[in-house]
Image (cartoon, rainbow, N blue to C red; front, side, top):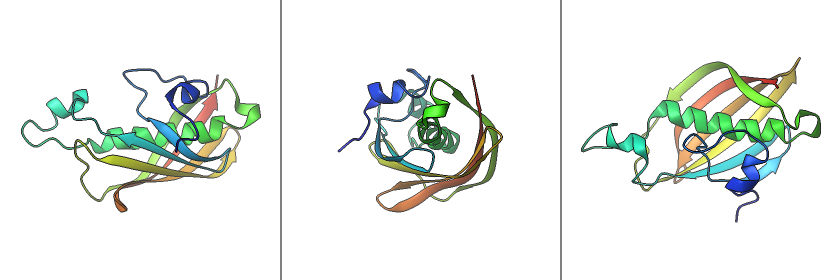
Length: 143
């Protein structure tokens, strides 16, 4: 059961369709950890061209989904309300498997530290318990 649905997520991060890429937040410990979920609908626009006849989820969009989940976590802290989390860096990104139309991505993000308005995160995206993307990334919290 969702802790936050898309409308509640929109109250925390500024992303909107077509670029709000997470469906719900299942777990949230503000400023510490969040677990999001994204159902990969077969009609997602990117599947038409990535790759025709053999559609797969683009890894870079999965990293964006992790970042949006991390942004919900970081911006759920009261002192960060109304801020925007801008990408500051992506490190150690690894594409370990394939997600396809119809799969559900589980997006687990931990904020490892926040220093001078920069949140550092570790994220894992998985399908049916199998890791498909792992990455470390950072976000600058601004307004």
